[in-house]
Image (cartoon, rainbow, N blue to C red; front, top):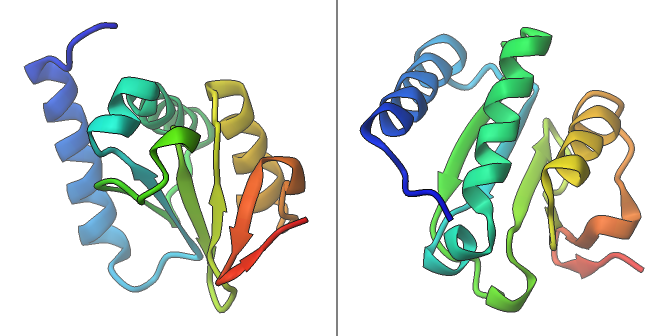
Length: 127
């Protein structure tokens, strides 16, 4: 597994700064990639890189992309939480870059939860 380089950290930092400065409180959605040790070991870096690449390709400027530590369910990493404005958050588990692209397209951009990758919506399990 590749190590995170200074260049990678700079890219993440730049992206987060832009997001915070340009969209503070104004984003239509927020995606949190859970990047605790377990998440990173399971591939969370790839999920974050995929999202950063897609944000650039699609010129997404109204979605906040952030990271957090462990979400407490290490066996289901990599995980991400998607929060659309005025809707309950949805926690996605067992992600791959391809699955994350689908979540971005269908949930973040299309407003439809991708049930087969979702563990919970708000405090309820998605069945």
